[in-house]
Amino acid sequence: MGSSVVHLEARGLDAPALHAFYDEVFGWKRNDALSIGDYAVVEIGNGPLTIGIGPVPEWSSRAAKFYVQVDDINATLERVEAAGGKRVMPRTVGPDFGATHILVFTSFLDPAGNEIGLVETPSN
Image (cartoon, rainbow, N blue to C red; front, side, top):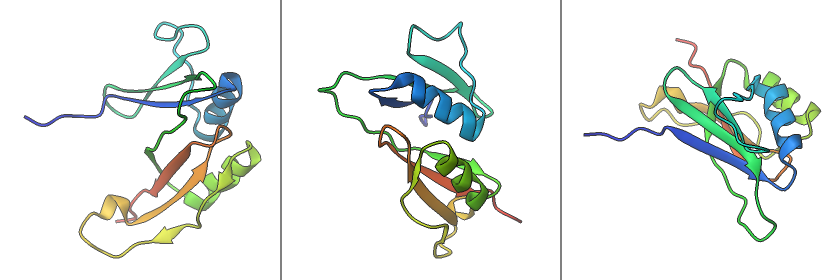
């Protein structure tokens, strides 16, 4: 039996800024019924997938890596930068190794320093 990813997290010291960033870039809205305090839970994707965006203690590790599929990486990177994020690498076309859903990719840093990946929706 296979396992599925059902929850992701992006956490940082300024939780409200992270909420605003992900809402502005991807339109991810907080679900108040699932959220607790500054820890916002957002339902994303086409199945039972959520992401928690919230605070983390100063001493805690701040790390997240997930990939968001978008139609246009360059347009998304422009929104990322306008919202306070930073490009890590340019839009990159990888070698064709059979996994067409991750052929075109990049990554950026959110305002908390989490590295997030983007993959471009396949054109075929």
